[in-house]
Image 1 (cartoon, helix red, strand yellow):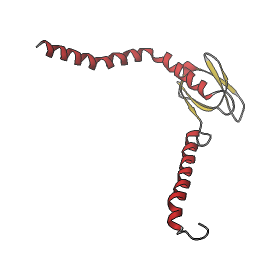
Image 2 (cartoon, rainbow, N blue to C red; image 1 turned 90 degrees about the vertical axis):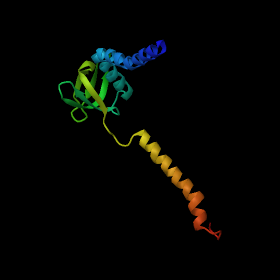
Image 3 (cartoon, rainbow, N blue to C red; image 1 turned 180 degrees about the horizontal axis):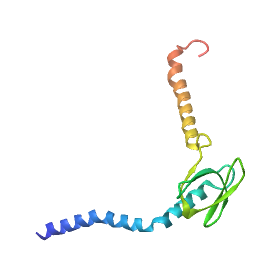
Image 4 (cartoon, rainbow, N blue to C red; image 1 turned 60 degrees about the vertical axis):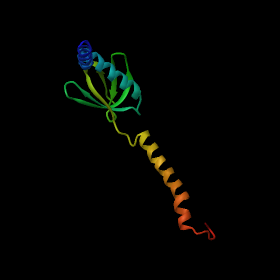
Length: 136
């Protein structure tokens, strides 16, 4: 009987633990989001090559490149006009890297596929097509 009660209590505890952590995570709210945005902007870097699209809390979108990075804010400079706009991390809801072409990961996959095609061509297709004659 004691074993049954203990197993039920232990099961209940394991089921309730994730719910407790979720509410604690929800309490951190804005501070955590601002830190995540800051980390993402720091990872993207500063300069013309770090093109971004930023979505603000009021729904507006800002496009350009990160030209300046400060502890509380960052500047996004428009590529066409050259006008810089200072954005506070607390007011930003989303930062996306603007697609400037295929990513590094995509190029690695394309390169690996090309190497695989060459290896298969040399090891499988060539011996099938060549029967040992001259030029094979």
